Image (cartoon, rainbow, N blue to C red):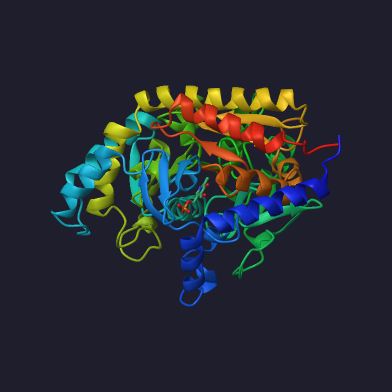
Length: 451
Ligand SMILES: Cc1ncc(COP(=O)(O)O)c(C=O)c1O
């Protein structure tokens, strides 16, 4: 089967015209924004949406967003996981409202922080916790601690990972060499000096890289999610743990996206045993907040090392970290929103989503597949699951992706602007999921994308 590029180009142009015609107010705001915001947006990723200009949002409520032109969208992007709980969850809103009247930030703890630390220990099995404002910061602090504890300079990441705007992680493999990731803006030093990179699921390469004895930590998502979902092969995590221990390297598991796997993330669902665990985005229901947890052994090494007095200007922490507002939001979110019951609802919805898309793929004989992790699900323009980031990145088809996203957007459904990912919020209904299936069918079927 061959993708009909001519036909795809025509379909995409039709969708672009339709989008432009339906969003005069967003278009006017986008044009105005170009005069005051660099690139016409307050944050560069916001130009990534298919359509040529971003939608300007008025309201997010549950699984839906409304834009300034009055269109209502089923939101399967959910702020790329920041709003995985659904928008404005009632318990979080109530806690934020109450805390707002009592002050936002004190550089002193509130009782909520203790509750959150206890709850995180219960969920993830790591006993000691610290707070940050973003997952990026949590990862940066974890790397600093790992370097300080081990006295080693390098870190190791998997090819095509993403862990936030952490300098050391913007490295990929090219012909077996570590190079700056394409688009890496102003790297402070050549990432080959700070970072070793191996393919996910490649245990011999991992063992060889660790054998240099200079790797402070492996920073890993337990399943890759940022180049699409790439699952670990059976035995991978056991070996990763054993190899890192043997090499004296700390294992940092980043659960920021894989929290979609369950209330204790992938770590709890698969009984992983990291030295440090990081988590941000949805933990406070979309209010900026992040955490990192230390195992008993790691905490002990921090406590007993007098150089690791992390107070003041040690490069760890931040004035607004653990502010009272975010901490109240975290408590309410963990206590009442991101609960077992919520996953009991969202994971079956994701299974239904996967079945629906798989059905259409089979009907239309498309060489595509569906991958799912908990309440996160996505379709791929390749016939088999990728084994690693390199294979996954090679399957990206920017034009096809753009068409599928815009076709969905024009029919009231938002996918993430990166790959074809859908997250299912608790407020999604089965009818919503089936509507996506219909839109997907309509997008791929009319005259067929393939010859
Ligand atoms: C796995 C992972 N870790 C960390 C981050 C960074 O999160 P933030 O941008 O909120 O700092 C991301 C963002 O996409 C992520 O996917």
